[in-house]
Figure (cartoon, rainbow, N blue to C red):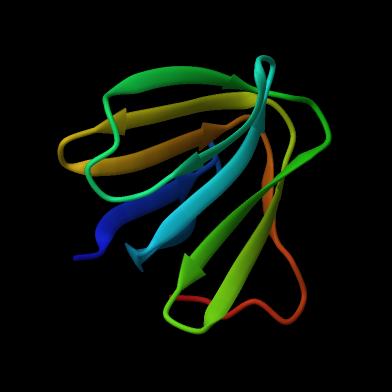
Length: 91
């Protein structure tokens, strides 16, 4: 069962949708989140990226700092700056 994911910056919502896995680099190291993950809050690194795996495709978003929040409802990524990488599908 997929989880809900939203990646936002102060300017706009960069990507949102259903995903099977989210991988992000935090100040504690790289983390992979799948549906049912325990709740957590992480600090994103500067000049990092978030990879969202949906079905057979991967959406990549370049992020520059911010936070990752995992709850029962899904994953929220609040980035200081975020840009959808070329070739990634906009939802």
